[in-house]
Length: 391
Ligand code: SAH
Image 1 (tube, helix red, strand yellow):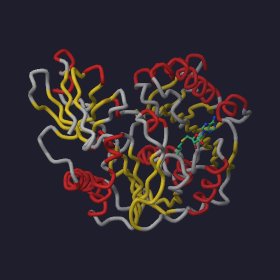
Image 2: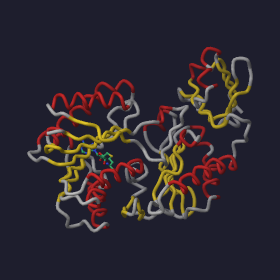
Image 3: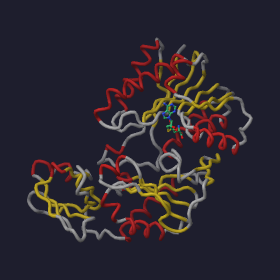
Image 4: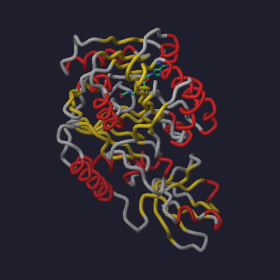
């Protein structure tokens, strides 16, 4: 297997459990053309310290999988995946059949995302090492006996950085139907795992949707960046008077319409609008009691943070201007490079410029099926604020 020796002055994060080893932290690397997937990591004194996924083309050369000399094979993955599954089974309600089974570093399996949609699993392999071990991972997932089929949706920027092509298709068992029927907190949704965004559904917002349902009774609601309408369904479920759902994607709105219908809200007051949320929040002549802002990540890199802050400020400023007195704003950022303290400052700036006095009701984050490794704070991305405007 490949071997990596760390520089003395760069080894301490790894010794404390950070799973990423950057190219700049390695003193020397030995390749192994025949078994390139898994590398052993040694400290500067040549003591063995860890074993991890090797990515020779990436700035992140190794992502640590094990701090003991375990064999990285099907049984290894089966042990880690079984532990993750039993956690979900213990913690999630039976009325939820869609959840994240493996959350990469947060489940000590860097580069691997597995989402469960009822009888189907959808995987994303994001690193070269994990990609090479795909058949072991798929065999481990099959051994759980929980799925009729395993589908792959490995796409996107992270794959490019690892020198990997997109890879989409059936990995095992049956091909998923065009729309998988799932339940989340007893609400029904249709998920398109072949073409939907991410793996088909934004599983990370489940708890925050429950919170929005609690806030929604008798409110007029604007759900910006609605995707397949999940916040809208919960808002109606919570007794909203009217819900306007807005997204730039027609396909997302078609799914939203279907999902409203499935839950008995087909004729409920409100509308589905195709448009740019930035323009809408600025220009609408309506006011709402409750606004949800869940934009896509505006900062993909550290260098985007200033521009992204401007985008978040714009959205929140105009949303606050269109809130009724005493209105509620539930606002999110899913940019990894925008930490909660910065996000809160940006929203504060928006409140000042909007001329409104605002209180935080609750700080929001991801649910328990999206664990974050304490040793890998980079895994934290979703944050939100539930706010109340005074007048
Ligand atoms: N709130 C959703 C997830 C939102 S994902 C949920 O709970 O499922 C972000 C969404 O924003 C995507 O559906 C994307 O189509 C949409 N989007 C991206 N840019 C947009 C824009 N400028 N205006 C409106 N929608 C946009």
